[in-house]
Image (tube, rainbow, N blue to C red; front, side, top):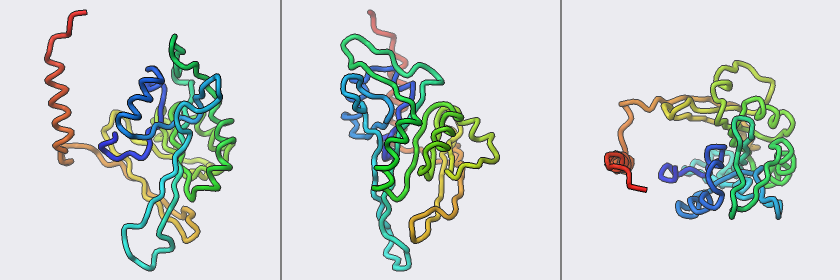
Length: 225
């Protein structure tokens, strides 16, 4: 994911099934940003990972007709424990505490909207719970769903103003979202495209080498324990 220059990675129950200290080590090793606003350290009440991150996007063209040259985009990470147990507190590990994503979003939104022009929710879990977050906490411009993505794809109409997107399962497609903003940095239109990752997509040599290394390792007999 870091090779693909992801700005942030939201943690879901599959990631939380491992140790928090291990996740911290991976984050540091790959110099990336893990997000999760509603899993906290029980003793201090502080987030284990960053609740949100703000990235500034600068225009890559010198076109003077552009209404603005910079855009501050906030990404908020939330998950729920409705699809599976998020974590099991282990001996020797920090004791973790789960908070309801709706309540956490209500607390975060005022400070985020002061700092960012555009707010994106990265959500992992149940589609209905994400809808509750969007309905009860105004201010999210875009929501990216992981988990029950098929329910989002089946939905044809919604009263929510937030643009909700996801990519189809098993990594077969890359989702592309285009946003058109006015001079006040408000979204006026959007379009979504699913790009199939088929044989027409040229293989990247770096990823090819990673696959080869994995295949070589898988051929080796398991080590004696």
